[in-house]
Length: 163
Image 1 (cartoon, rainbow, N blue to C red):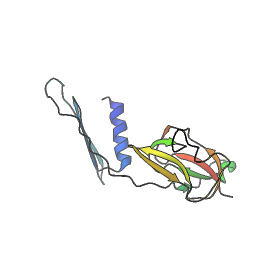
Image 2 (cartoon, rainbow, N blue to C red):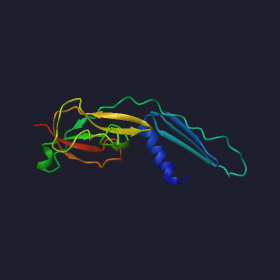
Image 3 (cartoon, one colour):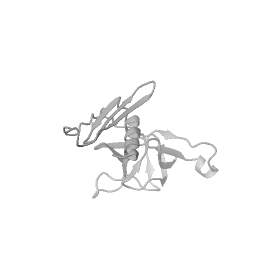
Image 4 (cartoon, helix red, strand yellow):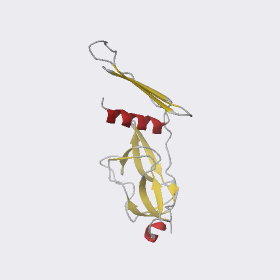
């Protein structure tokens, strides 16, 4: 496990809300604890020949409730053209999907009128498929993420014209 993978694991655990995750592999033991004061990460690397480790053990994060996208009005520093739109952002990290299954139609398309509670997309996180619902009514102006792309927490997904 290289440093980049460890850093990505730390970021994922911090955003997931888990308080502690332990990971043990052949030559690496990782414990990540998140607390109210600070985040603590302990990494031990042991030569693989000296200690035989049991199968990897990973503590699972708590179950995630189906999140609802929260609309955020863009800041005034953006152009006046975008200032009239509402940005719908990702409530979790995961993989963004525009349709419920490969053989099904898209949830929404540019130009489509949506209402509160309409499903806009699915974000898959840790094998859980979370339907992202709209909290605003309006017309979809732009879809900012490609299908099957990874998304971060608070990443803009859609621009909606509420008028």
